[in-house]
Length: 97
Image (cartoon, rainbow, N blue to C red; front, side):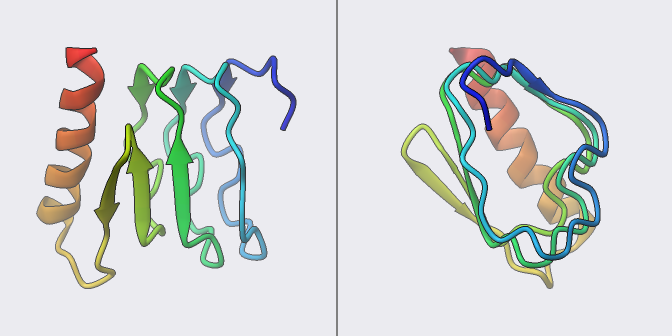
């Protein structure tokens, strides 16, 4: 992904089942709704510190989200509420920065 990209739009990579890995540049500030939804081969994503907003369902198929050195493990058996709590924790960290 080019270093000058600042946002990933809604559904940008949705249902890209063969996507295994993606490197987000430090220029990324926002990730749209369901941007990586259904990316079943994508197991983790490392969010740069520049992220200021994440849309609903952006990572609903991931197993790990790494943000500011903290790893959030996502169990595929989590309920919707549990996944929302993880995303709320990440959003809270974003807003505190």
